[in-house]
Image (cartoon, rainbow, N blue to C red; front, top):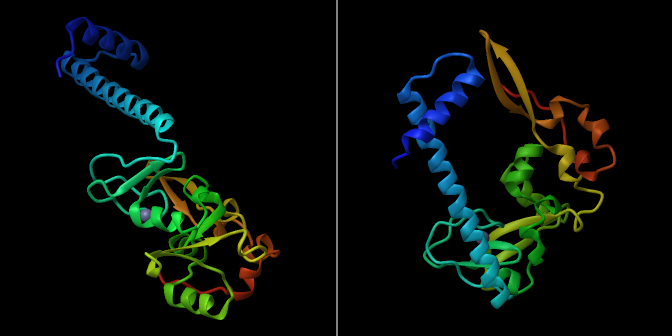
Length: 220
Ligand SMILES: [Zn+2]
């Protein structure tokens, strides 16, 4: 993409004023090109969003978006060619959409991610491994909703907070936190699990899941 010279000059002036030091033409040109590409991308996205909104007015029950590789708002998998459904709840793969149509899960889950845990969320927040979780489901300790393939098998499972009232806490209570650390004069950011910042048994004393939790030393 070719950026006009007067725009590059403007960028040079701005960068020099902000940084308090001279900026070469090549640097200003590079920054201008990157900014233009970003603006173009944002505009393209805005146009796509607008078009989808307009089409939704025409087809309120939704429609399939052309192409491949959209992420499903429920299971997170990339969608295959035309294998997606878009409606006011966002983009879903066809397996999840069919599950919604069969009322295996409420449609609102794709917009309201705070209302449920995936098994990855449970593993991330509680270090809960798949075999333990399967055991819990079997014993009725936790209630899962299963998204099936046409009524059979397991495509994906979700754990609604309202299905597990008093057992699962609101997700904001068990979110990872970002920590900034200075090492050798450089600032590094990383995330740490919630239980490093509070006494987990006190923090979640009102939630049943803590009855099944214990401290384990993790080898580093
Ligand atoms: Zn899906």
